[in-house]
Length: 337
Image 1 (tube, rainbow, N blue to C red):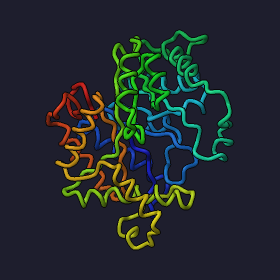
Image 2: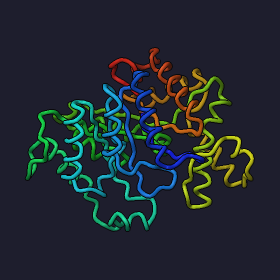
Image 3: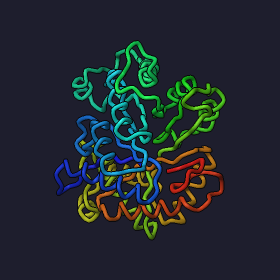
Image 4: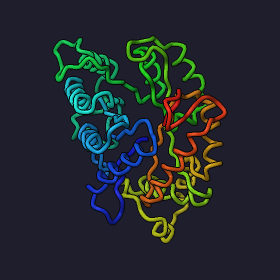
């Protein structure tokens, strides 16, 4: 599960972090295998800008679930500093820490300038991952502390180029978003698996698919749960600001320009939202199409009780065998959520 610490209308922004912790506690109780947090800088509707800090708080409130980043945006950080942060987390919560790495440069020019990074700078992502891996493994030019003999798993949040890089480095990949709808997805995943170079961290290729999933008693109720996120995304294209989640009733009472309505509908169509049977069917098809070993869900909605109920319903869906050998959230099978 990936939680982005979405803010909600009527709540202080900082409350989103407490909500993330509460969701992680519930996810552990439900049997989820991993709980990851995001890195978004200066985005109005998201409170999570420093994954290592939030992971530290999550570790203090949980005891077994794996904790990680989805992901750390490596272009904004020195590899040595990232290594030190995650080695510290691993020392505090041994054997429970994951490190997901992305390459996003920030959504707007002012944010990129504030991060001291511009689009025309050289792409050093591959070299930075290699350097970071060396620090984590104790083979770098200097020894990152605290030193450990455990390996911290590294995942690459991948686009087309990212898949090729992950295959070269011998690392697992996480794919999602528009890439899942790409006609070339099968070819890209096949190339990743064929070109994969086994490494000490990953002797075999491994694919995680990242999907927006919401479960309710009926398809209509689940569609309502997906509406606040769809509305925020559609409005952001119009206003330039990604806002806090709003109640469904408030959204329905507002004017819906045709362009906003079209964008809302497009977002809802991409979201796996429905009854348990509907969601199960869509996840079955996704598993068959991708052959993924794990499922990463990243849902959010205004109603927190409904969000937790959706998480519980999804956990229930994942405990029964699917049409292929994939996706379970309670037992250490090949594919987990």
